[in-house]
Image 1 (cartoon, rainbow, N blue to C red):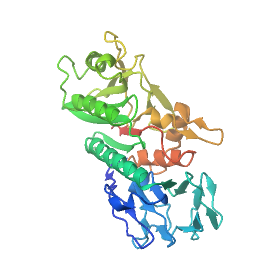
Image 2 (cartoon, helix red, strand yellow; image 1 turned 90 degrees about the horizontal axis):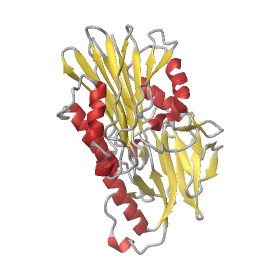
Image 3 (cartoon, rainbow, N blue to C red; image 1 turned 30 degrees about the vertical axis):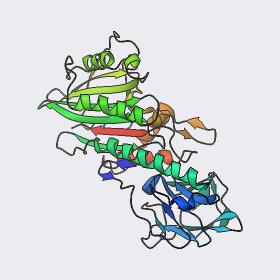
Image 4 (cartoon, rainbow, N blue to C red; image 1 turned 135 degrees about the vertical axis):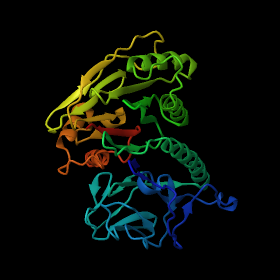
Length: 387
């Protein structure tokens, strides 16, 4: 997870004991012949993509550095729970944690068996019980290593937060396990204009992520030769001509692109098949959807995009997001959050009124409602507050 100032180091070392083995990018050849073993797979949070072998010696998980697995999370107790193997099964013991341990959404009362392939939630962290042969483990470790490198590259291109007198920003980016095609950014076009944008490429995996990076670099470096970057419709039109699906492995993307003019407080924006931006009033009591009719980028090269223009009131906020946010599965009825659900969370606000941490507040609010251990798509939120 990356939220504004914090860029998580996913390679944080974990202490090992005689019953626990962390699997990195290499696995001794003589162990490849061994039978299947039980593993903790950390599929989210501080140690994304790591496997830890479960032995008979308990593995203590908590917030303290001396725990076998340290999770930096405000909802994790100092010594939260322990995991060990007993007579062929894996057992979870809640060490009187404040916020509990959950197996597939059910809270553990004292102790419980952790079935193979079941998910374990500890605070905001998700773990899965896997039963793997060494060859399967090595393949998974290699894939996870490649994916972490791709994630780190995408994260390295995300912008630093703005905290100027004119505009403040906050953002949160949580890549899905398969890594999607989300990216976003903002930069001054000149002294009087700020461009900001969020895009989402179809599909998952490295190809979608690299396609997204190509688009992002064209926007932030302003290398679309025929485009006036002050004109959102012109930018989308040129992107559409440049990134036709037939020339880019059938990949397409959605995008929301806006340009704010400081002296007139006006915002020009255009959307190419993207979820609407949300404009929160200064009072925090109303939300307006900001969208314009336009198809996703890549389908029809000669499509004509249209810009809209509005004037922003003082202290107005705009929220941009990918469909990984609104398509998160929440509630007992397994329904998607949808735009209306996000609007409700935006209006709920933070009693402090601070923008820093606003994107992470929304992430945690959605996490508390979701039924799945990981997001099926990248989760991106960008928040801007205007003077």
